[in-house]
Length: 333
Image 1 (cartoon, rainbow, N blue to C red):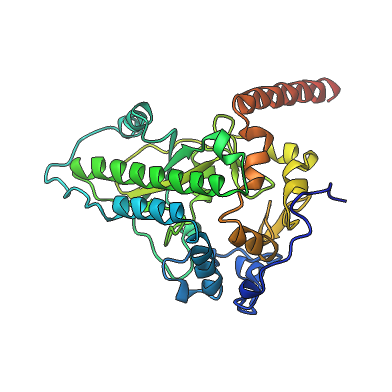
Image 2 (image 1 turned 120 degrees about the vertical axis):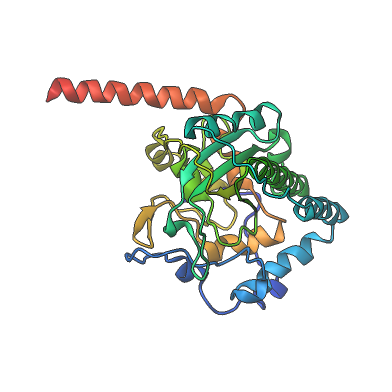
């Protein structure tokens, strides 16, 4: 039984309910489907008229526009998105794959982003109806300001999310521009409307962390409180390896985000989704509250890993526990 919650009971706005398309978003996402397939776009479509829940997506923007600060922040991000990229240089830079990937540390050092990783592109990361021809995907992470995001679901948290989406977009444009000056094509991908690419799977593959119960990536350094952007390219970057910290077992025994979720959209155990058992957020329960609070963000704000300085210590504790269990099993075997 969930603990008492100051945001319950929650009653969706009738105007929003009237926009529901009559199609279950969980079905679109492949909940309960044991057959592997590419993801289908259920929300954040570049053109909302392309998806069944497009009316609800537009409701989100219209409702948040009631606060002029949201419109101002979106206008600033649009300037970043509209800024032209450099032309692709005629001379192609000759670097080793390790040097290419090592060069990304420059963008962390100068504050464009807080984390980078690289993965070889996989077709299962591309939404149905789209194609990506590039062979590499660079993932960039920008961290939320904890004091702002912890106010979720207040507008201050929603504005912090918008601010970080702007930073993520600027970082992607900057990295793509650098690659193009080195003679290689590069395409920035920014959220939340990422178009062809589902960004969480490559983020997991390139070492950003593991999927948490709240459906977001958990990382020891950044917690769950960060946003992603990406750059697509054929430049021969060396992939960075995935990392595991024991998040799955941790989330099974932790109920903090589950109890904090006003519409009770988080599940106590992983679910089968498109042939893979993983943590899953109930789309139909989450969306109405998300829309009416300009993005909610409660689950990532309350996640223990998101508190400054906590994640690295938790990861070390889990690593020591895993080593102890491994030694005990070896001794018993």
